Length: 528
Image (tube, rainbow, N blue to C red; front, top):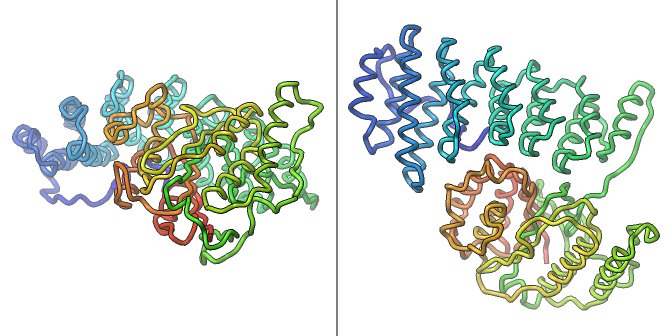
């Protein structure tokens, strides 16, 4: 299940350590005293394993207090350290989560609830609370549900996402009120997405009407809206591509009368790749190979489902001489908006008749079309990358006509080519855009800094489009396996949709396909 954070995946697996199934609490305590300060992660994991095996009604509260005290000390001692110690903390926490899931006494559960209410000002302290909250998801007593209710009423986005992941442990129809509160309240899109995945898992088709009502809310991100549409299509067996609440209400009413409704929403398209989002960062390759003369200038697109040769479209940016579509009612634009709208049209018109000689120019031409067609409620940014990366803005910006004119000029200005392709650097920077604001810090130390808490980055971009004609050859991380691993850690909380486009036969299609598949995205191959 993709709902759980990456470090929860080993939950409930068979431990590598064996021992006396009826080990006494006294023996476990002695083992703690002798082994807890060991530098070996195996010894510390065994401490918690023994603690789990020593559970009994008369010592459960003692053992849970000891476990929490030890973990608290573990965090204080390893705060700020990276590499191996970070991994040790995660492995110990996995054992702790299994331990929490085994608790039975009300007193022990109440103690853990008290731990959650304490301040958690550091990333590792928050992980400690996250594991407690997630472990409580195995129990769901009235007291635990009451605690979740209180956490959802707090102002902490961290607590909101933690509760969503706890509810995902054992999806139940009894959790629906909490789930719909997340969908209807002012929670982050990340929490809403988890709530929707739980509802999809519950698979109660009678909830379609409530989901339609959620669609009427104006503050939903496009990513959340399209997840609701996906669930509605599944619940109703109607393949309707629209996020209109009125249209879906008509579907529900018409299912008893046989009424058919046909309508289609038009999402952002990049080389005909549909991307359902309004919070997006474009990561665009400007390495040296993008500037070489191509052997051909037509583009054939294929989606990576089954065969990569399944053609979808050609000449994605339109034929020369085609009229530029009028996408707004000009009589309703303000004087300033009309001025910038005409400038955008002129820029697009100039490039539609331009002879395209390189892949980079083809990319520029397509991006101009994308920007011109972009809906006004879209928030976006553009980052060129080669050995370094060059963001247009330090933040997401809303697509007014003035903003789009500025972005189009940024695209036309292009980027100086460089020989190597720093895919990992631009990915890590884009994940941490919120933390990087107001700073020109582009060092590897910043990119690899795991002390930047992903919970502090909630609510930012929900989708990336990564286009490259090569493979990772430069940056903080070059190994594709290491990139998968690090991105998985960053995206465990964020759940960003990473859509990838392999631009030409020299692109590492296998790498890009796996990157998209593991991160809620779609992969497309463009044959140049």
